Picture (cartoon, rainbow, N blue to C red):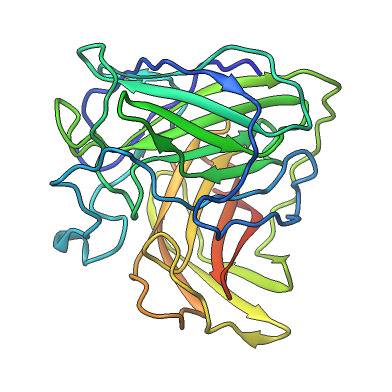
Length: 321
């Protein structure tokens, strides 16, 4: 794989970002470190594996970091830092994300090691909790038909390790989403990215047409809400199974569902924030998100939710005016 330039995304109080990291690539057995991940066949996922891992991340927790929500944001999980930017750079304001520009064969798991460096050029080792973890790591194929979301682990020296399922031939973008808990970028949500090319014959699959409904693992997911580029709107997701409303959603990352969006063409990143915390194993059938997609066009949405201990990932194309 060849890892190249990626992007920055931040939440409330965007400050300096730019990053330097020391990484190493190697084969690895991919798995969900918390035992909740599973492989699922998703619509439009023909070129990428869909393994999703949910794990606690850092080996060096910060004493003053937490996952509580900001009262100013109405007590919404993940809303204590607002997101901005598009995640398409590998450095900003002194923080840098780097990884090996190494070719990796397709059809085998990957252990990707990377680091985030701060304005002083040293690896950052203190990260705040963001929806129960200290690092969100996304892997997205350039045509948006492959997606992984994992939570890597960090060594004491600041080196992160992300276990990824095999990637099909083609171009992929890797996103590191994190919040420093000290230094110039304290409290700033950064999303930095790099690209990697997996060698081999790469067939590009057209993005599935925009639709309000999709299915995964027997569940029907319906999205409601009219979105306009650059404006914040409420997006509602409704889940049913065999025509019956789903009411047994289990907590996942401090809420009942995690929703991420990527823009067709440039793979720009957007995180959509849930509006209600998870309390007990009885979430659903309606889930609400604050959505602000900065550009018009098609966005590929990936919704992750858990039932009966299994993590499901639904993919859907949404058009934004």
